[in-house]
Length: 296
Image (cartoon, rainbow, N blue to C red; front, side, top):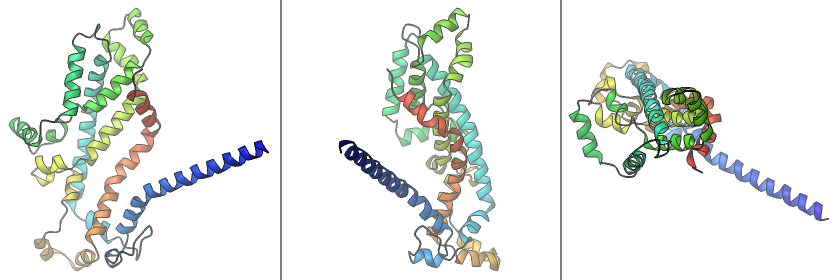
């Protein structure tokens, strides 16, 4: 009787946990499903609020409006360039800072001073106006470097990778020293291969951060041809002067497009690259976050 009661209690508990997880999953996916449906629905249905998780009066007008502009593809290319350049720069700076900071103060004189500088920089910002004035003073305005250089040293990523390295067995360093390996050999042949979970984690954070950033492009980029995708789709407005040069087919598409549906299409398009990258790094993500967030 006791065993039966315990089994029934276990089944009930598992059922409650499963239902709770399914509910959380649905609540997490509902905004995405709703955005997909809104972007694929007719303007009248969206305006009437009849769209939930399934498209109503299926229409590709929102995507046609978004994709018909050449500037969209130019901005897409700028964002790809930003992710590649900024991601590579952050990777190099993060690894080169995390490795020496993972050494003990006995081996790296002044380590604690550098750590305090990093922590203070992470907790306190210099402010938006000094940030802008500094970038303008060094002549980076309206260039791709204005989007990648100011964030070249992500302090959170450095601390995450540093803690990961500090959790590695000290015997690895001793064995490398006995084999005659210097700091560069130890880093390139030992610490980078062993740190792949944490490196994949910080790389994913870097890629997502660069791809989703739009405010810096709005402030620092004045030339539309150099504007990243997120900045462009957040400022994508139809100018009245454009109506004079539009053909009837394009006019019909515009009339079928709602602001809400167009915004949903923007969200969907901006999600595609991250959704393509994440599956390849997902298996490292949780492992790297857990191992790099705690120092024993």
